[in-house]
Length: 134
Image (cartoon, rainbow, N blue to C red; front, side):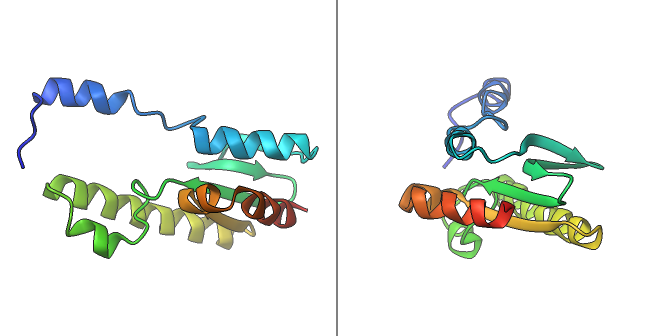
């Protein structure tokens, strides 16, 4: 399937996609604040952007969207229409692995939360994050 937009319009549309303060992030942040859990959002450790962190305890939580971070990528890539998207998501997966490994080598504990976990069972996912951060 070919793109119905010009490259300039596609670029404009893609740049409008939020990378911070997504619905997923806001819902988790709000739930943690209601529980009086201390954290910093969008913390930068070196060159690694952590969605939710407790730097003094070296705890990092990544809140990853299923599509952008390649959940079940093997099945997904067969359905993607352009090689561009396959490569983009493949590189995101590699970057995520590299970042988690770097943090772990620096003594951080790392938790990854997937978008579908939050949607399927919000309360259970919030409890998982709270237990990890305490």
